[in-house]
Structure formats: C-alpha cells, structure tokens
Length: 183
Image 1 (spheres, rainbow, N blue to C red):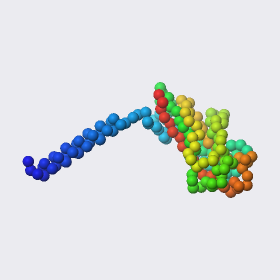
Image 2: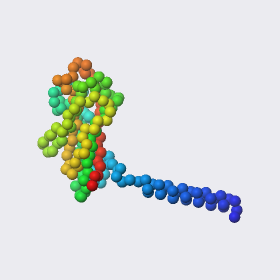
Image 3: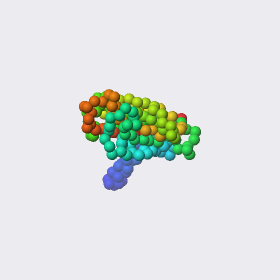
Image 4: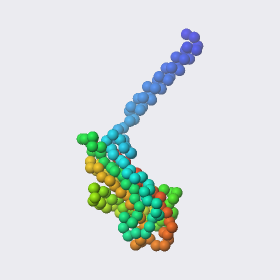
C-alpha cells in the first residue's frame, strides 16, 4: 500500500474510534433525573407577565411604606400547559439582587420582600422577609405546578424599620423561576 493511503486510512480509523468512544461516553453519562427546565417548555408554563425586573412597570423610586403594596413588583405565571396530562411538576421562585444599581446601605434590614399568590381577585401572601444580601434568594420551592397561578414578588422599604439612612438609596433586582418534572 502506498504511504499516503496508509496514513489516510490510519487517520480515518482513529477518527472513527474517537467518534464511537465519544458517543459511548455521552450515552452512559447522560442522566435524565438531572434535567431542569428554566423558561417555558412544551409542558411547563413560566411567563413573566410584565418583566423579570422589579418595578419595571413603575418609574418611581422605592418609597417608605408599611405594607407590601407600597412597593414595586414583578410577576410570573407558573403552571403546566393544559395540553399536558399525567405529569407532576414543581417549581422554584428566586429573587436576584443586582450588584450594580443596589446601594449597600439598603441591605441593612429595612428592605423587605413579599411573595403573593394571585388567584383571580384573591391575593394570598405566602412569604415575607428582609433582603439583607446580594446573593440569590430562594423565595419559594416545591411549588405545585398542577394548578397555574400568578406569583407577584414585591419589594419595599419598611417605613416602620427603615430610617433616614435609606433616603435616596436604590435597589435593582429581578425574579427567575425554574420548573422540574417529578413524575
């Protein structure tokens, strides 16, 4: 056999073996239990109705208030597509604080959040707490997605806690959600 044909055949065999090894590795290392959907898929509904940004629909800065409705919010619809049946899924809702646009002094206890589930004209406060970190905060986990609801995440300066040190402070954050099939 001529030298160029022999070299070409050796390269071809090496590439073929590499392809087979790569496919075998991919096949044996894939694990479907680690799959998560973020955003919408054929069965999951995650729809940021206004925007993911807190207060994107409002131009005013955060104001002092005594209740969550004095603040700004973002909302998301979470559930299962009505065409999907026989599956069970859970969701997780997060609050992310941007490092740019958020003043350090606002994270000292006066900045609060509330998670509200909306069902028609009924609103139910599911969780309320303080924002004291720029880390991603898990607001709700294991949300049953068999029923579709709108979730509002409100952020406000609690006027009963916050003093003058919060005056002219700014906050910038957004919400994210994940869905995972469990059955």
